Image (cartoon, rainbow over all chains, first blue to last red; front, side, top):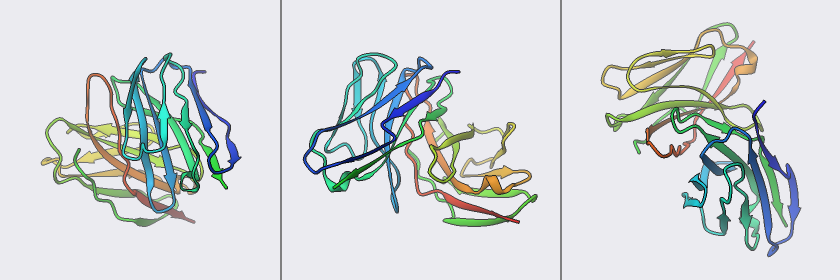
Length: 112
Length: 112
């Protein structure tokens, strides 16, 4: 079955370190998204991509970057991790024709 | 994108219908209404979406008022496993992508 997977599922890192969260989908969806979820803020959009070589900033993009070199992957990089980036991160992909989003299981990141 | 207003929480008895309201008074003619839910610690799950006609699938029914300024998600026979946060989102359907912005949602508690 096609799916969307995130790795690592749990990570602890130190302030200032570079961290990359991986997202891989096997549906061949053009659209991919990264959200973060914090208590009191719900889901907030970080970055998104509508296809290979396309990337766009969401509402909370500062301190994050993404790249889209193929259809299947959208890695999220924290260039210099900060304690404020401690959160649960969700990756999603969607079919353009329906707009239905498919989410991964999430990656819990703790920055000490 | 049109903003949505949902009650912060609702309770429902197991086996009864759960009716979750959503106000989207600024919705425009080409904006769709989407519903997602998120069960604790999991990635959000697509439920249903519609433009102006009522929609039904195996999970739920979506009732959109004639003026499209509000909608109701109906879970016909709620079970304990339906306890989750339910998100109502309105979004323009775009040819090249479909970014969804999540609000705070409604916490639905199904009680035995």
